[in-house]
Length: 269
Image (tube, rainbow, N blue to C red; front, top):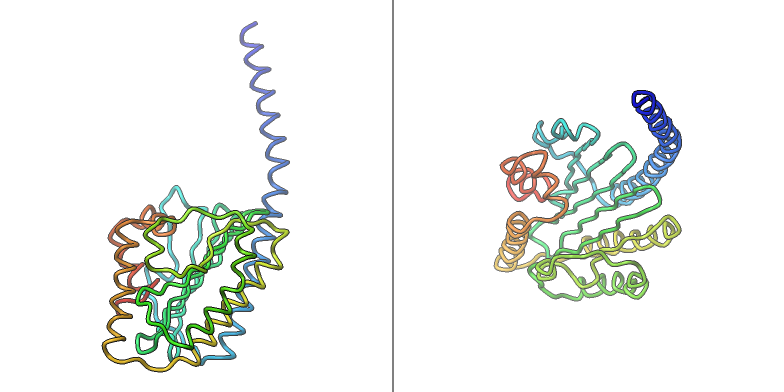
């Protein structure tokens, strides 16, 4: 009798599991399709705008970082890395990230030449089904004011009232020593896709306007810009953060630090 009960219980659980799989698979396929579509939208727009404004050329990435292979338990994650550069732009780095098949991530990092008074632009958008994790950071440790930056910062800041309406993501206090007050860390949903894209295009084009109009700085200011960014990266590695912690998990601490410094921020040639 006990064996029959066990058998029927097992069959019932198996049936429930099969039903769950049948329900989940279409949802996962839809989530992946939606993520791919949004990734393509952001990537295509960004590449078009960058190529119209700058003569970009490939920057060689170390072979071990060109396509990152996670640890065995993270085989369902794919990271494809590309790096370019142009006059005034020391690095234009992007990541094509797929996580657990259905999560898609768009990442862009622009690190300008230290010869110009320019901040770093850091973008991380994660698309998980109907949820969007949306991060735009203007990293400006040196805080050297000039009219060019002020004008472009004002264009970005005009979105602050609208951004304040989204659910705000938690950010470590130390970040605010390095990023501007109009950097964005929010969670939204698919109903916000149009306004999120409009915000992004404003930030990207305002940033590139700032790059094109920037004038060269003095040697002392250039060192201040370089030292400020290096301090930010050192603090980021020491204190950690969601993205850098993930890299540490599947790359190990030594390769994580090398990747963050040489590829992500291009601090070392």
